[in-house]
Length: 197
Image (tube, rainbow, N blue to C red; front, side):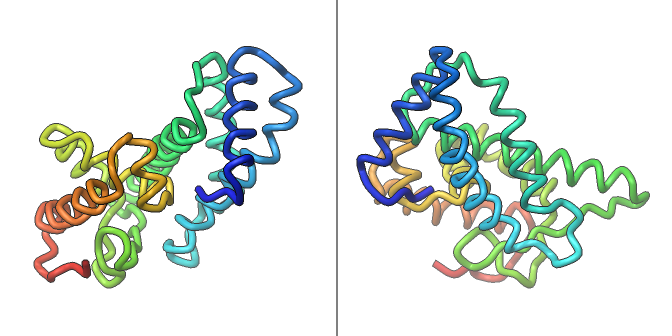
């Protein structure tokens, strides 16, 4: 979730920490910043979805924002910590939505997830979001960090350097984990085509 300057990042972190400590004025200042961050991430994700998808960007943002209320008393470490939690919340919301859609359509009609080459699977494969979530859970049992890299980059829309900041590893480690996790997921999800590096 890019921000324009280092001072903006520090301001964001300071406001998060003040909000976590119960400062309601900090929440007033934080709200437009949080909304902007969430809108960027949700737009990034929803751009890959089919055009007739019934979950819209604004609804996704609103749901993440509502669920963030449960995290008010958390001790926010920094902006990266916030981004990680938002990525996880977005994943949960999207998977819950997919499961709901699947249960409404007998025979399992969950919407396809269109992941561009920079993400996990090429656009043509239409991997199911629920299957992706299940595969990520399996991957987490084998290598939790690789699973988190996928979650942060795909569901959170974070860049390599931002993912590295959240996980407190180097950018090279994130790139390596990204490549290996994509390869594992492609095999697990049954796509035999080589992925783009």
